[in-house]
Length: 190
Image (cartoon, rainbow, N blue to C red; front, side, top):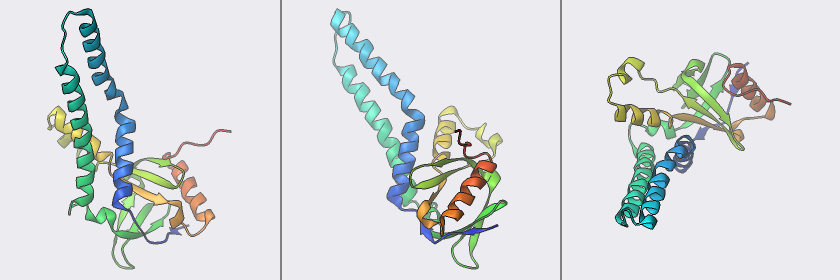
């Protein structure tokens, strides 16, 4: 059985919002570092061992710059010519072998299910996390900072399938069943 959806284009604001929320969800633990530095400095200040105020400013400034760096990365992806196809209008044909993304009846691309690493069902859409597509051996040649950046940007590659593009509720249930069968969505426990 093949499900055909209505045409849909991912909005750039939706992409930036989703990518940034996913980044925050995956990296919130790192917020402990600036908080620990501020706490240590507060203790040193209160005990009189090393009174200073500059570290508060530096820690907060570096934290804000780090978050802004990622916000600029996600915004840049949405503006980049290289990623423009990500925001084109597609009609999706979904079956158990692959997902076809069609611009029109003759043009489009195919995403095999093994290229999808994970899926999430939120209140209004399915979000399918795509694999980085890169050669894992090539990632080994990068320095640790570039590996981290490549990994984080790889997480910002996804398909956003809002429930409104499905022609019927049975189509939506079929896609959900496919995602569960492929092990991308967890089975519901009752």
